[in-house]
Image (cartoon, rainbow, N blue to C red; front, top):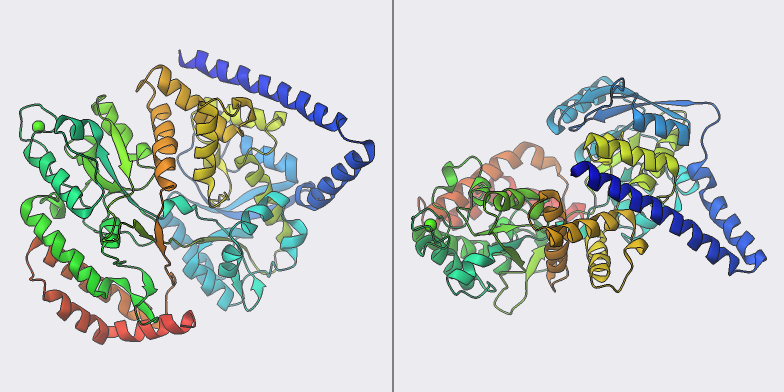
Length: 561
Ligand SMILES: [Ca+2]
């Protein structure tokens, strides 16, 4: 069954290729000969340096963080179908300086590399290590190499951030790294609700904070699943309460934002200066609401003790939670697998007193591809980035080598991106909305599926498969629901509160852990009723005295405010 579907899709793929060739020929014949030549000449000239392969192979030692991959028989981590493809296309021979199997191990091995001064040729680092390496003069300056060697595709993605991505990677006017580009849609967190439970209890969808409380309470008290058992709980809550940069499941950021509070984020205060959102009076107001919710069981009152709070969603014990657009991939596919009647919907809620849905902005970058000072081929890393960005964005989907590559990954059942030598995916900041719009247009028949890029085409096929036989293929369910529901909610009007600072300051190194601990204890204490609301005022006072005030001054200086 599965095999047949696969062959079917590949057959369609070949058909698209054939169509594209015909279309391209038709387009060309419509132009005058001169224009044709000039255009083709310009395109290849602009990208000649970007994509030309080295005549003599160039070795590049990289730091490799591998994810969950399966290799074909005979392939190894640094000699496999993808590295051979990259070698063929670029002339670069990838060697691993060292390998790590998770982020923690990667970061500690990187710290050792930096300490010993024995750096790989090209590698990806986070914000702190980037600053550290730039500060100690260990990185190649890419200011001149980038414009010469980056592909028009890579440039167009960076350009779409209006200079923000590069300003993050530029120190004293010099470009020291190629940053990743975050997706706008990842910044907000929304409310996901079981629509079938709302229907059974005759409840309207949530819009305000009060609506959410009312629904969650009904889901606890009125047997929403209709099994006659008292087996549902309130809103699941991650014991960490909030997310800092990347949103996840069961954080309270959206609820705080409805009170115009942005804890864990540096934002503009009412006086125009920089403010640490966790100490704002609006945060206290939200905590008082949460204390009330805890008392009434509106939030799961076991949350402090739970290890995996998403289990409540997966096991359909909770029908309302806070989460980002991609929740259908995780944890909702498990929920639907366990209860095929589960109908999840997402809302840009709760709104604030004036009806606005608020969220704080996420950093545009948090990782950088860098090159050690002295590596004779700094441009090779850029050429490598060009090569796998082209794969990732399906620019030349008619390339036979690329088709073979995708087929191999598909047969292995692993996403091709998991084999890339660097964990640095480039996509347009508005990628989710772009794909959502094309997908909806194709489903409505306004756009032919053949016109879709292969990524969106895959979503289209998933949506069609889901429509034909609902909830049979959970991958199809997740992809179609994330891009249809999550994509739609990503377009909802929202007020984005700018986060002004994501780095660290000198005093943070010494003080931040203790301050964060104090904050976490106070927040948890007030929510669970162990501490009275006034504990918040004592916390703010202590926070300022124990380094917070100094750190705020340093942040203000760092951003010139
Ligand atoms: Ca029940």
